[in-house]
Image (cartoon, rainbow, N blue to C red; front, side):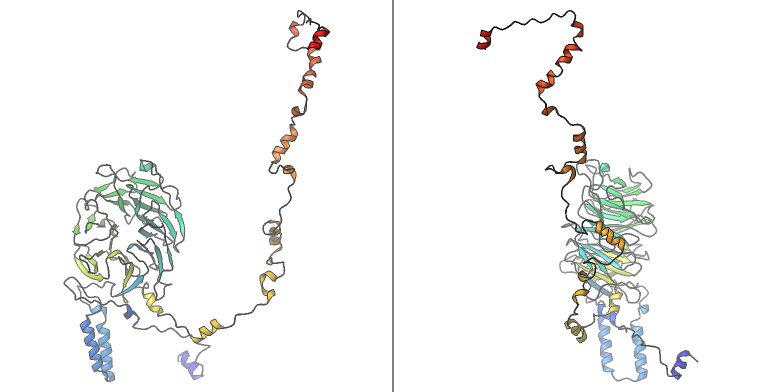
Length: 573
């Protein structure tokens, strides 16, 4: 016999009050379900869980058969479950997490930088409205607002944001020459130095001297990162040293002047190589164990000259490189055969230079955004096959997708759009946490009469002597005897008045040092108070009796004979 049955027989239902568990709405995810308005084309797949025609037909059928038997109800329930079961999709359709969407709207211009922390709990976004915003899935409510917003560099666009591998800090790259480091909560930790713009040799400058475009963290070392700039360098930095970089990689171009803008940089998954993409269309790779004098791998004309490459990213195998160019192309490269691309696709419209491309977590697909070809059209999110870059799925969104991030832990796709929206695509069945946390919370609780009555209630009255300033101790909080003695010795805390001026500085000479006073007393000069004639005559007798310098002429020196003056002349004079 079970214990609960024994307690029920004895008349005991439980001990104390049972906490009421919150019941979740089974249809809570339907509010954010995507609805495809346009008809699916050859490459476009409807992601609303079924066509609108089938949905309306099922609704009419349910209305007509409102009176059914219990057996028919069981059949209908089984039919409903089978209809919305994603496992019955066609075999060639891959289950991408994009059946539902959540819109985060707070930016006013295009999203130019987007990053998720390694746990998938927070989003950091940067835009052309000069703002950075931090979003927390666990702390947001249904209003979907960020918990922090700030301007990292005044009126400069945000180019790139990257979280460190431990998730405790992130880098913000703006249009300035300095990278900024923030902690997880958005508090600034360091601003790395800028170099001297008047020095020609870039290896002798302590930092970048021109606009910074991109950054990347070392995959193994959380204290090292790299930045790429328009001063034709990639610099390796240490988090603890903001006064100077560790190493400088000077990128030399084949063009006249031997300089070019480096718009993107990346580490290989094992941290063994550093890659850089330039405006002159070249791709370069350096071994991290080399002296960085010249690249180990290089290819000229990888993309059209003069276009800014949006992103470089390596697959998990460490050999396959994916580039998203500003020349409307997506290309796959193999480091073992770096002369020509493995595959290329050239009909991907690029409207913003920050448009990136990423690999899926299973390393089978490539995801990137494509802009509208004509005015009035919607943007497209393309899912391409890694083998041949053919379109597997195509998803239409409100505006042009610029930044795309597919987080592997929560299995959700976060897309930054050109209208300032952040679209979080997820699936209720295959995704974990993230946007689903907001749906589990439900709408905010309505204000009740009890809440209003508590707010309008009379405030509590405190007796005067209950306040700290009236307690024993003359306003000083009670503490240990040692603390009171220490505070007594502190002139600020004890509010001691200024003492009168005494000692060496008294007598109108305030500020005279003690050393000066001692020196004046030890060596006192009295020549100013003495008559010079008397001082000379004092040595007259000594000089006559004991001459020091004229003693040799004392024997043969004639005695001086002076003429005597007559009284008449004395009177005349």
